[in-house]
Image (cartoon, rainbow, N blue to C red; front, side, top):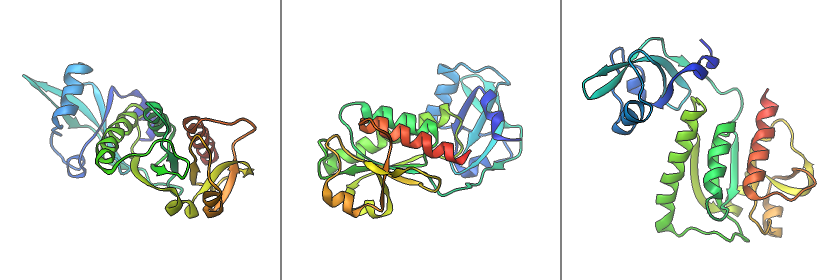
Length: 232
């Protein structure tokens, strides 16, 4: 059974690894059960795919009982191994709700990790007491996008970190750079004001995304799309 079969399932949910391996009925956390039973209103026997977010997944069937829903495994556990290094996007935090959209779309497209940056010219900077709450919220957005797009590898959101600490491992999106190519798996997108000289000097290389100046979230989506296309 290949990943294309996931497209026809009624829902896709995350479970813990030990649950995925269970031979008996799979009990869901309260939020997942509520979503399947009360929001999607799944019927007895509908097909739901489950994954541990680490590349392992299997098919199940909905079983309803008074006031509850659980999943009965109907297939073996399958494993999808990564063929390439994880696709990592490092992005300066954009203003407003644009970051939510960025996380959602980059997840749907197939990035594996988003690292949030505080760049020298960043307008948005999170205080430590705000960061943990924001990361939890963004991870929920990423998880929902994983479920919607039937991913079996969970995208991880981390940061924010100082851009200079990670740029030596990344190529940065910058006009005048070389073309993006196969093998570019860690790409950084700067803030509205662009990268500073120090940051450009620190980066592993520069890549050009085209003639137009893109917003941070647009550049992140464009870069992810191009990198995923190289995998095909």
